[in-house]
Amino acid sequence: MKIFHTVEEVVQWRTQELRETRFRETIGFVPTMGCLHSGHASLISQSVKENTYTVVSIFVNPSQFAPTEDLDNYPRTLPNDIKLLESLKVDVLFAPNAHVMYPQGIPLDVEEQKGPFVTVLGLSEKLEGKTRPNFFRGVATVVTKLFNIVMADVAYFGQKDIQQFIVLQCMVDELFVNTRLHMMPIVRNSNGLALSSRNKYLCPNSLKISENLYCGLKAAENAIRSLVPGASLSRSEVIDIVTQIWAPYIDSHDFKVDYVSLADFKTLVELPAVENTSVQQPLVISCAVYVTDREKPNTIVRLIDNIVI
Ligand code: AMP
Image (tube, rainbow, N blue to C red; front, side):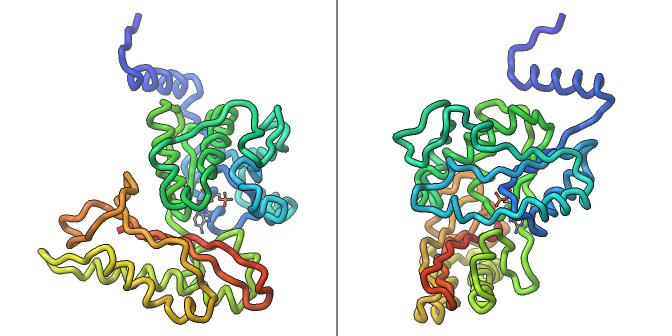
C-alpha cells in the first residue's frame, strides 16, 4: 500500500496511474466565448499538437459580465466557429447553454445570484478588477465548472488576458486543481493590434488607430530593454513613454485611458521603478483603453493589451 502525506504525491500517483491505464492519452482543453479568430486557433492548434484529444468549449459566460456590459451584444458566430474547429481537427466541442452551467439561473446582479462561486482574493481586485469588480469571480467560477466537466490534463489560455491567466494559475495552485495551465503568446495583426472578438465592434479607421495601443507598450519595452546595468526608469517615466505615443489619440478623444500598469509578472504588484533586464524580475506592462468608434461615436470598446518583459 502507498501512503502519501502531500497533495503532490497523490496527484502524481493519480496522474501516473491514469496515464498507464489510458495508454498515455491526454486531453487538452481550450475554453472560449466563441467568435473564434486566429488567436483562439493558435491555442487550439497547440492543444491538438500536444494531446491525444482536444476539447474546446464555447460559452458566453453571463457571470463575468456586469449588468452594464455587452452580454447581449457579444458577437456569436457558432456556424463559422464549428467550421474552424472542424478544420483544426478538434475532437469535442462543448457548447452548453446558461441553464446547463448555472442550474439555479444566473442573474447579472450579483446580489441576486445563487449557488457556488469561486473567488481568488488579492489578485482579482487589481487592474481589470478595479473597473470590472466581479469579472474574475465569473471567470474563476466558469473555469472551475468547465475543468470539473472536462477533466483535462492541460488547458490553454492566451497571454492576451494576462491577469486572467495569473488569477487562474493561483486558483489551480491553491485549490489543487488537477489541470495544468499553458499560456500562449498574443496573436496580433501585421501592425501589432492584438486580435480580439471585440475588434468586430470597431470601424476600419478606429481599428487602424487602435494599433497604436501596441506601439505605446512597445516603446516602453524598448526603453526598458535598452537600460544599461545600474540604470533605471521610474514607474511614471515608463507610463509617460506609453502615453506620449498615445497623446494624439487621447487629444482627439479616440482613446480614453482606463489604466497603464507596470507590475510584477507573478503578483501584479505595481513596481515603483524598473532596472536593467539582467537584474529585473519578470514584469508586465499592461493597459486598458476605451476606444470611441469614429463612425458610431456611441460605440465605445474597451481594449486590453500587454507585453511581458
Ligand atoms: P475569449 O473567447 O475572448 O474568452 O478567449 C478565449 C481564449 O483565447 C483566452 O484564453 C484568451 O486569452 C485567448 N485569446 C484571445 N485573443 C487572443 C489573441 N489575440 N492571442 C492569443 N490568445 C488569445
